[in-house]
Length: 353
Ligand code: KG4
Ligand code: ZN
Image (cartoon, rainbow, N blue to C red; front, side, top):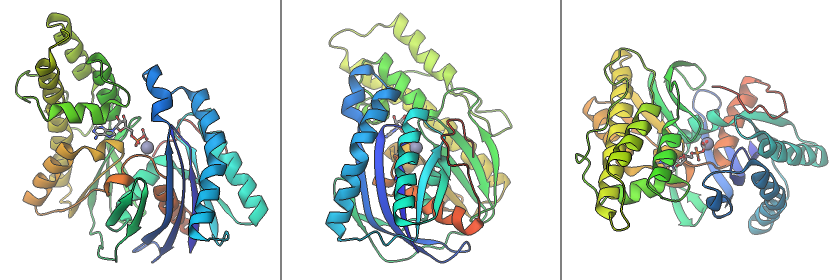
């Protein structure tokens, strides 16, 4: 089955074409085309995403990406279904994708499936290893994986931090989530405190490499609590207080790098400990990481080491599938289609997993 997917929940306009097979037991996906137009440069001067600017850019980019896909791949629209993100996300941004998808569904007379963006992140781990060719264009290798359950999944994005247990491709239970800021949000806020540009996650990761992660002892919120909830706002406030007592000077690059590395280590310690506690309690056979923060190499490395030590398989999507893209929306759309799950085709900014 061929799926055309559209994603506009935040600041990436994305369209993908994905071939899916294997049913709900062992779904397999092959990326035919995957286009992402990032708006980072447009939002950067504002230090975060401006919803109406995002809307304007999505409206501009969607037809361009769609034409590019048709042209590059010589595809007539042979998709069997169209999938579109309906939430969670920024309402004006979500509507642009939904309206565009509705028009296409009408024009080509195809079924339209509403997709939960977070399910997109979740199923991004079902893609096979991809080979990056250039920017956002990549090719897929041949099949290898069968994911063994139960799996513990850590979803870490800009808006959400959720720990899940999956017993099959479609059966999942939420074990815990953040009580305040999401992990990505904490990265972005701390980056702002350090005068680093938006989005802060990759910037912190970059300078943290030059810093000493033991330079400052930041708190590890909720680390020792026997539950699977997380909290990041206290950690961010600890960075704020530290900077108030130790202000950055023009040349304090070393201090910046030490704070970034120490903050990152505190966040990773909590994320990895909570995930591994769940893996142990539920005797997980697999551990999965997904969402924008899954692009963080230090987090991937630490969670991989701990998972393998525990003899669980470790999965994290290829780099380009961590941050927002439409290929993952196609994968989640396939699962929803087979499950006959029907989400309303309206923007649902607070849709949960
Ligand atoms: O999943 P995503 O693209 O969008 C949402 O659904 O929210 O995640 C974006 C978040 C941002 O907060 C960004 O700072 C963070 O992912 N991020 C990272 C890295 N790359 C992106 N955080 C830490 N390290 C990274 N390398
Ligand atoms: Zn996302």
